[in-house]
Image (cartoon, rainbow, N blue to C red; front, side, top):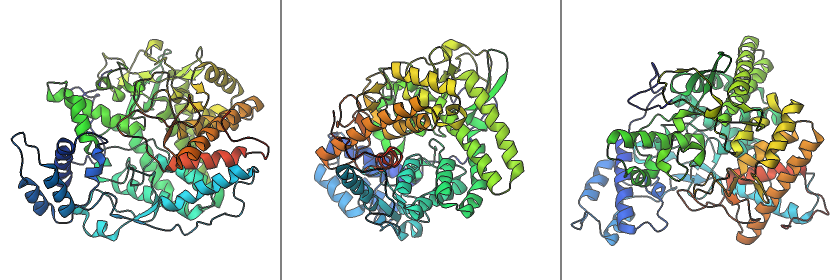
Length: 569
């Protein structure tokens, strides 16, 4: 199935509040384009310009911008543009304030009890201290004058990923919270969740991030997992009661309208699954110049709009960008993300359904629990029927058939499974529904071992070196964590051993890079211990929220013996 604006799924339209490009965003995109032309593309970051708050009202600012001197080709002289930015714009990130976390302690009681090696413990405490560096709150001026900011107001403090990512992000926050829990920072973890619940209640879904320009899409839905992890540590029933109605709203978002697909399997049974689908067919404001460049090969606006939707949808997936979403692995403009039913998204929604069952039972909402128990069983059956490939021992993304234009897709065909190896093919092992089955765990272990994804320093995202950041040889913290945790929780000694081995490889590469650079980074080259990952739309970032969180979670779970060396082998 090919989904386009001209030929959408039957009776479907964009669900939720589609946010138009507000005048502020339109102006900042113009500034972004002018900066690229004037300053050049050396280390140019388009996001920088859409994060800048205005010092004066938009009309005054835009009028001054329009009066800037320009060459015949429209280029603003460098000094004039620089002077304009200094006069009329605040620096990116200046509308957030550093805030000392109320629950930070230099060495918390009971911190990482299994870490015996003093060198590793010293490093872990340094990573723990990074939570202070990454802690922010929104300045009061954002709420008082929202028209001057792309940052959205939030009720409480939060943790940012770091570097260019100056705001709270949705799926990053799950692993940030796992690290905060290891650091005994329960109040900070809960504050993040309350901010995400605020966005969910305000917009009907959790935004990709807390910016006006992220209101057109969500991200992998892990809010229920955050809440459950906090509850398991704190027994905070009030949080569960507060969150449950909002989680039901989020579940509806992912299971109605444009996100919902019904597919018929080989036995002619209908199954309902979910896909990513951004509510947007324009350039992403934070990447407007690069999106326009990508679309420049197309002559027709409809083709450009289709590409823009695919780019935004890949961003919603979190895997931006990867050959996983591309028809031609060497051509980003062949993205077809909306025409793919992703394994990992449906695993996250299955986890959400199981989490809702647990939470509903916990607070006595038994009817809700029974409803979602039935929903979880149906999704598990759907995942087994549509995604599972017994020969490969993996769950495979399903590509929708081109000649269908309706919501209900019939005629499941094995050739429509994407049989390339991706780390996402193993994400369902994170879910108890699958890691509690011994035969499935054994099959997945064998498949992962022979897949080529397991490298010297961790699990690669794919086997294709495309230059995209969610492809080989890059490894990302969340992928390592979900696969490792799923194997470790299976109850199999062999699976625990494999999980521990992967975790040790990942910890070592984190340590080697930290020793060399003094920073934690967002992604690593899994072929070489201690090397940063690369590729993608921007230079590698430091900080780094989810990397810190996964490291602390691994050290909490597996520890580090006194005699075990931390250096790369």
